[in-house]
Every structure is written in C-alpha cells, then in structure tokens.
Length: 120
Length: 114
Image (cartoon, rainbow over all chains, first blue to last red; front, side):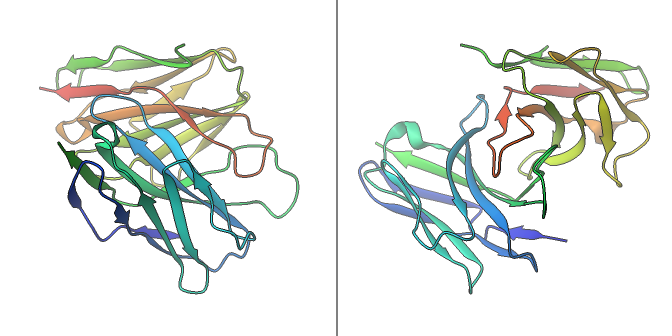
C-alpha cells in the first residue's frame, strides 16, 4: 500500500516570501502521478499542481512549482511571492495508475496536510 | 459556476438517527467519490461509483451506504450515526477515462452527531 507523509503540520510566512512544503511517499509502483491540492478555510479543495512520475521536468503553474526527486520519493511544493489568498491546508496526494486501459476511478492517497498561513 | 454541489453544508443529527447527505454535479463525470475527513486529518475514501458500479473500500464500516440514482446525483446514507462519525464529508468527481485526472471536490458537508 502507498503512504504519503507530510512532516510539517503547520507553517507560517510573511506575504511575498517564498515557502516550501515537503512531502515524501512510499510506493513500489513505477507508474503514478503526484498532486498538491489546496483546501482554503470553508471552501472546496482544488488542484494546485500535478506531476507524472515518468516526466523528469518539474511541473510549474505560475507561482507554484514542485521539486520532484523520484529516487528519494520526495515531492515538495514551492510557492513564490506568497499571497494572503494562499492561506489554506495543503495536501500532497499519490495516484497509482492502472497498467492498461484507463477506465474507472483513479484513487488518491492523501498525506496528513500542512496548514499554511500567509501573514500580512 | 458551481460544479460539485453538496447539501446541506451543515447537518446535525442525533446518535443513532439515520441521515442522508447529498451531492450533485454538473460536469457529467462518470466517477463520484465520497470521502470522510476528520478534524486535521487527511480525507479518507469511503467508496466510489464508476457509472452505476459501486466500489466499497475494504475498511468502510457497514453503517455507511451510498446510492447513485443517475449520473448527476449521489447520496451518502449513514444508517446509525455514532459520535465517531462526526466529520466533514467530501464528495468529488472525475471523468474516469484520463491518465492522472483531476478530482473535483464539493465544499463538503460538516456532520455533527449529538
């Protein structure tokens, strides 16, 4: 079974600073995706960024980027120029891919989350 | 535009009194998921539907049931809620045919058991 570990329960930075959230995972699979989801207070969880395990290039989405170290099974999220709206719970998640046809659910295994607060 | 809608947002029930939580989607996705999220914990998958096919997680208690009468709607039934069932219940959807596809979440229903 896959496990996902986020070792930082809480983090706090000043607005405009850069912050890095850590995530490690354990799997014997070779074909998978990794995700960061954001859950703002009292609002729904939304996708921040995803990374396919076969891609060596780290994914980026505007101010959000990842550092994917496959051998180390590490998947950290970097938020540059942090904004007040980035305050949220951040979950790292693992998705195993089926070996053949993609048809059906692709389940997520979530880490425990990191509560990030951006201070003005 | 609301894509995954959950009603109600807050639900209070009594110990042992059956309760139903509702989820609807406007995305026409094939897969609908129900997660339980307790305070400061990771969401835990309870079960999912792929179209009309129901898939239960091995450790989901029998107390939890689900119905999907059509593509748009999915219900979570808790037959006899206990105090330990107080949690946020999240509904999510996905297409079911795309590698590494995004799951789209609703805002959740917070259940309180008295």
